[in-house]
Image (tube, rainbow, N blue to C red):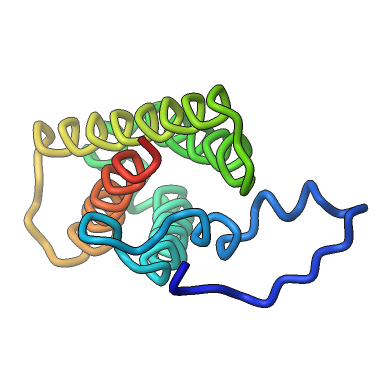
Length: 154
């Protein structure tokens, strides 16, 4: 791959290597349809915005907001599917079953996030920038990232 990292993992800690973004990114050769490995680090932005949402939705001012109510259990399902996709697909020497499972879990993640976006689009919006940046934008970013990850894992 064009982007590599000097990773010297102890065999005793092989389980943790499955969560290393560089190992996951190295699997993909950069080509016409595959973005460069730094694309995988967009996940850091997604994680930060989702963490901010996780805190904001607990605040009394946003707890009863229609945007928060439209999320329901879909956010938990998206995050659980994302974790499952990394566990099943971050190994450098995946079997066909692991690749298929990883793609399936990425697809579940993408569908869950798009259902969240659909629920938010159908809810009442006050149109403020606070609502956009704290309640809508994290899921828009998450949706774009999840669809590309689904396509790349296929």
